[in-house]
Length: 407
Image (cartoon, rainbow, N blue to C red; front, top):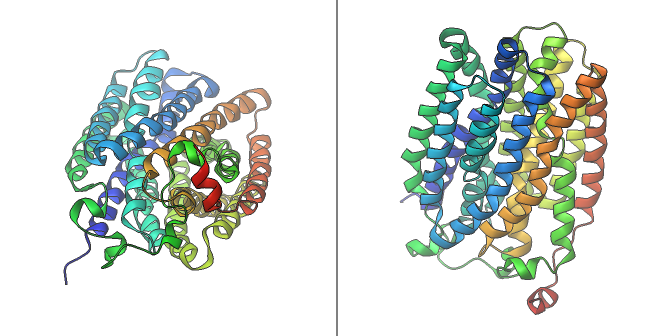
């Protein structure tokens, strides 16, 4: 019996997300190397990642619209060129403005073609198994976070940070462009149906029949989801940027710090593998809210961490919840608003909510430079996730009649 092509799309999305997100979360490792060489302040260098985060979230909107219009293959391939070229260009850095251009702008445009096109494409290929498919695809991002930061630290030790950036840039370009041709827009383009079913899925699984952006914006739940994800994503990059220097502050080596970032990746792998399929059975909304409360607990763990055992445990809990929340974001949008315009809808909300994550690492750097401690930033992050969980629980699917009558 032939394998449903949708699972090949999942495998391709896994590979793209593994490569792009693994390279992205090596920033914390290179962050430490750049600080040691140039003696810039943590806030000034963290600003590079903040600009990058803002830029790639904003770029997700046009990338999603292009994926809806022309398909994801060309969009993702172009992103591989931009992201790989930008990382290789980081080997040329001598002044602080250069990482702002190479990484903060060019890499951001490339990264914008990863999350939204990959996830919105998987949403189109699955309905009944959407949570499972999203979990498997997004495990790539977590696996990359687990595997690549220690490799980056070893590459820096062996080649220097400039040589390591050249190697990573070339690998990103080659891998992403090798798998991009597998990303077909939707099952209908190949004469198939979601999940490999012999007939289209029941309307109940895509309850609104595929709302356009304008109609979705006239539903309160669209903005409620955006507010919830703004609250949870505002602090989400703080650990991924600052865990290595935080571990150094606690007296541990840079390699140990990189392994703590890998622990985040390990937790996220578990969260995405387990909670994606759980959400298919227990419901998307409750699963996301539970994950947000777990993320709050993870931030509290960072506050009380003084030894490696607590630090690793907090990193795993944070990663488990972060992986779940990020994986199920496109899935709940597909459930509530349909899959026909998933790229545009996911891209728009990702632009609004995800771009807020740009400010977290910068603010944490400012807090550290002011008081010499990350813990106030961790406490605020915990509180924001409690608020986010409450907002998600208040979400209700839009009524068909109201949604259909919206312009």
